[in-house]
Length: 171
Ligand code: GNR
Ligand code: NI
Image (cartoon, rainbow, N blue to C red; front, side, top):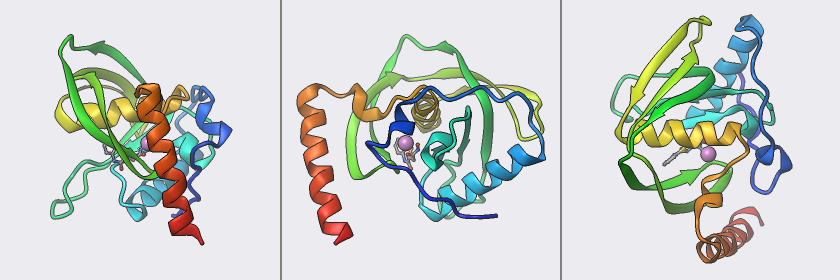
């Protein structure tokens, strides 16, 4: 496995709609493995392929706590087939927008259809934090970041803080 470089805002690949995967083969599984390793190494709980510079519709998620067994979820071509009327606000962060967090409103529950690590069709109902993480990752596949969902003022303030954060952490 290999740890891959993370692409950050405002890299244009993060704005692109990713391409559907045609076949779940060993090459794609290698990419899924590398994404999972990259996600764990970055202390993230989800990662979408555009974040490692690959414009394909694949994501990995693991929302298990640090003191629990890892529980990786691999989703190829994930699609939201149902979303609840009920909405929920939660605080989100993104490895492509380092050091920042903001509150985002999303449907509280979703049903997702996807292909798993073996290329088998799966359907999953996600609630609570899994619903948040899955929607955040699927948005990445459509070129959408959580900061796009904020008001202009909140986004501008966050981007200012991102600049400051980068100055303090890169020099
Ligand atoms: O690690 C992550 N944490 C997180 C917290 C709240 C809502 C969404 C996320 S996903 C994020 C990793 C990431 O950027 N995935 O795309
Ligand atoms: Ni993200």
